[in-house]
Image 1 (cartoon, rainbow, N blue to C red):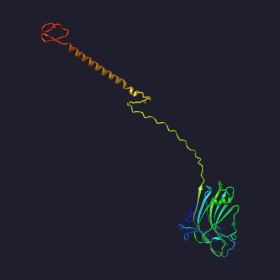
Image 2 (image 1 turned 90 degrees about the horizontal axis):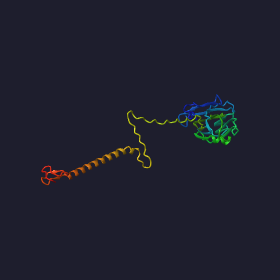
Image 3 (image 1 turned 45 degrees about the vertical axis):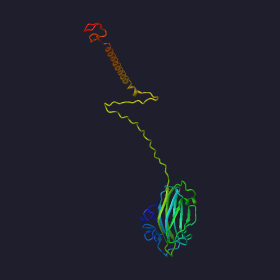
Image 4 (image 1 turned 180 degrees about the horizontal axis):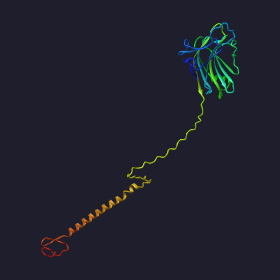
Amino acid sequence: MIVNGGFESHLDGWQPFIYDQVYGRVNVTSGTRHSGSWCLRTYINPAREIPYSQKRGGGVMQALSTDIRDLDILLRFWVMPAVIGQNSHTNIRSVVQVSLKGGRSLNLSYYVAWAPPALGEFLYNTSDNTIFFLPALLHQWTHIEREVKSDFESRFGSSSNLDLEKLSVSFEMTTVSHLSTPDAFWDDVSVLAESRVSTPTTPTPRPKPTPAPTPALPPPGTATTTTTPQEAGGGSGPAIEQYTFPALLAIFLIGLAFASAKLKSRRGLKGKAAVRYCLNCGAEVDAETLYCTRCGSRQ
């Protein structure tokens, strides 16, 4: 959610703010960085003539998306402070500001250095501000990681269904010191968040009915044969019936030919059995003939 959290594009995406236009300073530097080529430096120029109570310094701020579910945010950053813990002149902190619709603004303030009496700030919890004092290393990079949802609910109650107007995160250093020039370096800022799950309003399109496929027609002049499925129960069906008549006709013709041949055979045998030979001259005579046609003798 953070734009240019490593300050590699200098202050692009960030909104700088200064508490004292003459002595407050906010810029990027390459001399002391956690990673990459650049980091943010918040500091002041020394000015002994300024009244002791005048606060100087500044920082940067970036607005975040409000499309976040229940402030489920993980804030991470690296800081190298020149002052740590409780002291008499310098505050070094990060602030998450939650602005609700209706005008109420709630702050979560994370301090690595704090000066209760010097800067005129309330360093205790109020109805609109919750403070966290965090340990850090002096002049060394310290990693800070906070679950904003848990921190918010520890003071302000449930974060469910918050109606957010604005959401922002800032990093700053302020001081009243005349004797030193405290500073703080910041790098690798990130905010991870779980977005709200929105219900789609687009109606779901109805599926179009699929038309039944049109049967393909045969080419002109082509006969179409339709085969009827065989009925259950073992019936012969039309596929068998179309061959019944030719088969019977063939059987009939074969039987007729066999009978005709047998009849001719019998006639031939009968004719041959009726032939006789003349007892006198040996000539062949019919069975019904009483006299031989050759010699005239009686048979």
